[in-house]
Image (cartoon, rainbow, N blue to C red):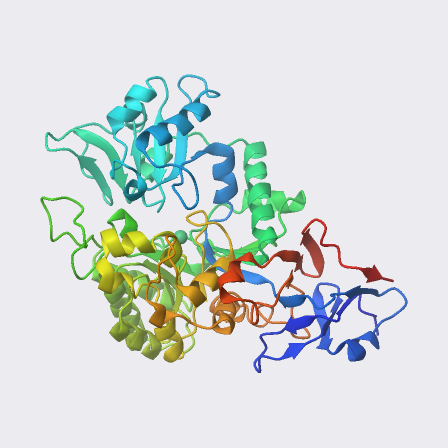
Length: 542
Ligand SMILES: [Zn+2]
């Protein structure tokens, strides 16, 4: 028998196995876990070459599983775009702040080159509105400009950008999304739910820039203990494979291709080592904080005074969604459907319900993404249909104050991401950061799930809090299960991949208010250390 290459001893190993066992030691052989048990037991497995690592009481968990995000966009944006975040994430408080940051960026871009920014939030700007095309024209007469809203569901273009995209006053309405016009029919520059109209005209990054973006994003994710991540709208795998081959990408990725009407699994599925594709992604609405989430009742503060009953809009008819869902469902695959507003969620439940009625498929694990404003009756139906939500519960912290004061009002805001209601029904779910919408930090998600505090420090729906253990399940074993990877990932058990994170403190016993501050000391993917906090070297003896 071969000896383990590493044995980690004297730790608190939270395994997240079926019984929720806590152990002291883990032995790793090759890319897999060889054994889990007490220090005494596992030391007996050591051979002459085995590296024994003394955890000194530190806590080991399964590597964190980021269930929905847009890897490597956070790194790409850092290479390409000016960050336009408002507090708590950044410093932008007004349109002039935003223009100043963009001007710095534009200083290095020759005339005619694109100036892009990402992450602005009108509700956090003193002017309480989107920047206008004219403001951007005045500040940047020589550059096309495209600014992406913090939801990534819309953005503002200046006149040069609109011209390059061929969008004029006389352009017909696009097949989906909205090109906003003022009362005279002039373009305002705002484009909702179809940023591709502009983005298709922005020249792609060079391969070197692309690789650098992947390297930055990978480093950011692994420093937060993430070992696997789902790319929630499929992207070209080539740059990822290339970066992996060059040693710039450690994460294991699943890419979920956007549904196409000619869907068949053979056309879209691949397994390329660091990245494989799986399932099919659909959208039924947009973003509540962008007024494109589709609600049953009107927004709290109307999007425009002319339309106080405005409640967002669906991105397609219910029957169209049902047809798409059936195509994927009947091929034996998983649907992954974005729905924030409760009216959009009603459509999703209808579509999946119809698919299951026509062709019952146990354990299909169809997903609802974000499910921000899911109602109690909808959770009953989710349980019945075996659907598994992935909650974007970071909203409570980053956008909770705005959901209460601007978009949803007190009653609806307090029950966004109602995790307690899901736990009570025995619904399995994951949590996600939706990076780059919020920074990649699974422990932050756990903290928000446990504390439900907004950025201003106010409680939002404390009755929907869950325990640290329940929240940790949603970033480990339940997220892996949701992605059909529970046989390889999500818990610390012999035979599974050695994807591990070593934390300075035990999240089950630390003060809940400090959960997000627990230092990540090491991240290990497939037995290989891919991140170590400086000065956190654990003593090892050969
Ligand atoms: Zn997303």
